[in-house]
Amino acid sequence: MFGKKNDPFPTGLEDPAAPFQGPEGAAADPPADPVVIEPPIRARVEALFYQQVNPARVTGLSRSELAIQVTQAVSQIVENEKIPLNWKEQSSLTRELLDDLLGTGPIQPLLRDPEVSDILVNGPNSVFVEKKGTLVETAIRFRDDAHVLSVARRMAGSVGRRVDESSPMVDARLPDGSRVNIIAPPLSIHGTIISIRKFSERGLSLEDLVSRNSASDEMVRFLGAAVASRMNILISGGTGAGKTTVLNALSGCIGKTERIVTIEDAAEINLQQTHVISLETRQRSAEGVGEVTQRDLLRNALRMRPDRIVIGEVRGDEVVDMLQAMNTGHDGSMSTVHANSAREALVRLEHLMLSSSGNFQVETIQRQIASALDLVVHVKRDPAGHRSIRAITEVIGIESGTIVTQDLFRASASPPGAGGGGFEQVRVRPHCLTKAAQYGLDQDIREILS
Image (cartoon, rainbow, N blue to C red):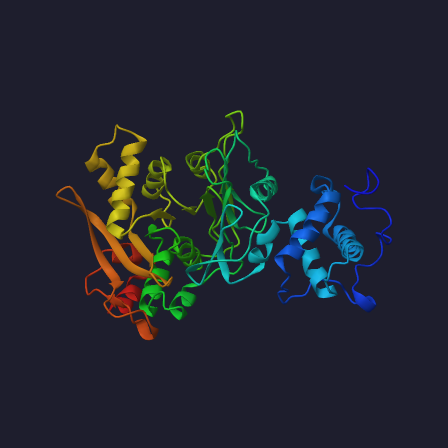
């Protein structure tokens, strides 16, 4: 810090307890509209600021206390150095410095932007965002590699994780619910890489999927009846295709009195129910101990009297326990898996089962999958960034060493649009009517598919 040894800011400033004000007593909250500051001027003020401030020693101050002192420090630098910055520009720069000291640095405004769904930092000079399904490069820059690493460490530290040479990979959930992945040198050749999937406070409903042309009315009505009938559902798709979004939407059809246990690596699921128990894995410590896997959590969840179990993404040996749970009374469970089609999703489960243990025979695995799952819902993102349900596939059984399926709904040749365009219903007799009949919903499904 500058000034006295133990003071966070220089001597000679105004009273630190004075109100955080702009000219003529106006509140000095930074302006909402973006303010453009010439890069050389910004760099000069920041350099002078950090010559006098040690960021490690401001952690004891609240944001409001720090805001007062940062404002005063910036004002004094501008005055002493005769830097041409007006009040709005000083306020904007103050906010950037506050974000840098307490938040996530230059990407903090992106976290506030409701239109941004993903933030991708590829080193200090390359920051991309996804807006409405399209990746675009921003003009945001970090000072240097050390600046990116400092922000990454602050983000990891906020959730009890750390980033260093002994622990260069972190996958965690930020306090606002956003999911962050960090990979640092020596694993990353071009500096620290930060990938953030933002958390949506308002989960989409099935009706929202229709209004966004992501599904037809008949499709969401059928899925609502399927969830209410406690069918076991697997949602498949590629990265960023909208698997978790569909999972959250389906949860709106679960009964309000049911007890749901969710299991994830980094919590993203935002179920629309009140009786939800959320469990999250834990990475091993730097000493190599303390790891808690999804399989560990799933085995424990079975002792928690769940009505339904929801696994954020099945990707390892937890698949064995998940299928066993679905086959032993935990109907209505759901999960997601990375795959390019519904058929490939089932093949993916076979491979995961074989990888988890060499004792399984292929036929045994197939029978377990076929008896556990009722539906596979495949979602896809097209080149324009539009996400939609492209198939609802029913799992029927085993025949000649193959899992037999049939599509109930699938993508049509026409583009997605209002009135169900882009989707078509396949005229087949659904085998899931037997399960729906147990809950008095078989006639509803018949009417939907008629």
